[in-house]
Length: 145
Image (cartoon, rainbow, N blue to C red; front, side, top):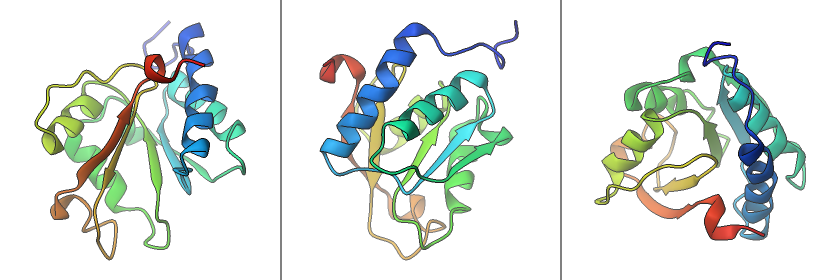
């Protein structure tokens, strides 16, 4: 089986609903989910969506499969300006490298971890040029219910 077609592992199947519940409880529900075409990314995004208070639009993008940080930034820049909160479900090392650009820590990015970057801007095209700050970083181990 190719890496792209690999299904979500049991650990991910357990973590995705827990992370969705954490997002809901902490008032960080996304308005849009963008995910890679990889089977495990789609399964993660769909599971998260099932456990949100209300289903949100889910967009699948081929360019997010093993995307480097610049591609992740380009994908975010394409989001409609009326959307205030976007969740990107992608892969390492791209997610780790992107997070490292905006933090001063060498923080591992484990499966199902959530990093929230935040800044004030008029549009998603401006988001990364405004040097977003890390609002929170949470892992499944930290919230294991």
